[in-house]
Length: 53
Image 1 (cartoon, helix red, strand yellow):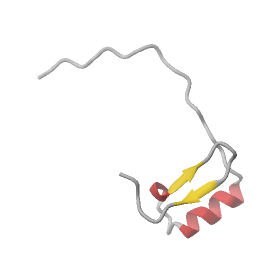
Image 2 (cartoon, rainbow, N blue to C red):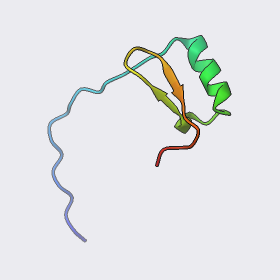
Image 3 (tube, helix red, strand yellow):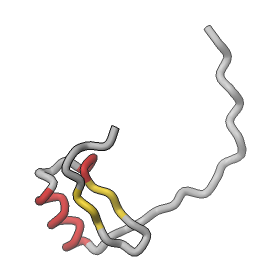
Image 4 (cartoon, rainbow, N blue to C red):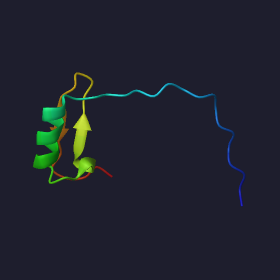
């Protein structure tokens, strides 16, 4: 078993929060699959055709 690398110091997490009605509609269009949603910095939500791997 290989040793795990040491974790670096904690870094801030970027959090984006789209408008709730926009998120609800995007989730509906994605068939409930949040993996198909991509939130942009300006708060818009993009619905992808396929799940990104």
